[in-house]
Image 1 (cartoon, rainbow over the protein chains, first blue to last red):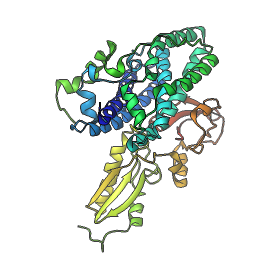
Image 2 (image 1 turned 60 degrees about the vertical axis):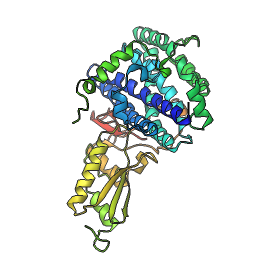
Image 3 (image 1 turned 180 degrees about the vertical axis):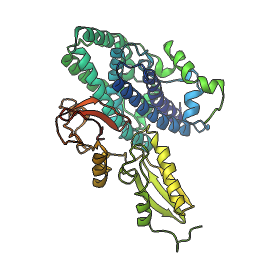
Image 4 (image 1 turned 45 degrees about the vertical axis):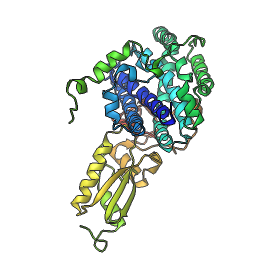
Amino acid sequence: MSGQEALFEYLLRLGDNTLILGHRLSEWCGHSPALEEDLALSNVALDLIGQTQLWLNLAGEIEGKGRDADKLAYLRDGRDFRNVLLVEQPNGDFAATMARQFYFDAWHYLLLRELTGSKEARIAEIAAKGLKEVTYHLERSQEWVLRLGDGTEESHRRMQTAIDDLWMYTGEMFESDAVDEAMVRDGIGPDPSSLHEPWLGLMRSTAEEATLTLPQPGWAQRGGKRGIHSEHLGYILADLQFLQRAYPNATW
Amino acid sequence: MTSSLTRPGLEQIRTWLEEVPDPEVPAVSVMDLGIVRDVQWAGDELVVAITPTYSGCPATSVIAFDIEAALRARGLDRLRVERRLSPPWTTDWISEDGRRKLEAYGIAPPAENAGGPSVFDRLLRKPLTIACPRCKSENTSRISEFGSTPCKAQYRCDACLEPFDYFKCI
């Protein structure tokens, strides 16, 4: 794999993570437990979709085959998506959505913080922009984990179930492969395993304050970064891509 | 065609841009918000650089359009609006005038300097005190981290009971 090919793959991972999670969050629009939460989830989705445009447009530019963010988002099949499995997991109840968000936000924050020092100036720029937004996402999702974990018996039960159920999807975020190694070699991105300790530190202190029991690191479900997805991604794409598939090149 | 002899000065152009309102917060101009990063002549073409407040802010393309329309109405026919990402926008760029206009409009301006501590430190700290833009009481509570746009949060004044938007500090 050439440096350019690895960089293209890496940018797809960054853009697909934000695209798929942004889509998942947008599914809450009109269905949230309270109007304020409806607005908040949609706004987080909007931030993530905005970041997607930046990442995938840059991916298209690096690839050099005339694909832009829209073409990459709407006209690829499931096997070509590079998001981690965590972000495609169903919304479940509000606790599951916020647990997924907290796991992701903490990792996303640590990753973007590293990427602001990337040797690839365009990546550093996008990371600096996104980091401000993601800082806010992280503060919000942590607050919900605390509130529900240290809340009523029912909210505690739901949050504990959520962090248990989603735990096996977190390991993949810290695993390294040939693409990550190429990024480390070229000074573009960090070794994913270097993010694990600070991430775990925040998870532990938050779980303790929230009176939750953090699962033990163990077997991890993996594959998303290579395009091997859970069955959920296909349903997401059927929804997300419907218009462009049914009416190719439709614009407004 | 604008020749270098007749073309308006940059100060004049900036004054015109002071009159272009932000589409989502029309009480302040695109200059007040610090969205316009640069105004330069490149030969006989005017280049206006703007930066988005948030990556996904849908107002950015409307702002570019409004700026172009306002300047064309002033007779500038060769101009280009450029999108610039770096350095990323911060609420520290909102002018003093802009902060006053926000408050008068009922939106509490950003409370603190954006270059604060990192999130892992901030996560341990208590929430900020935000004063009510109507009665100035500091007895307020946050209803939601987000408001009508990504750049705002929702608060309520517990003294005068007025709900209000807070322009978040980033």
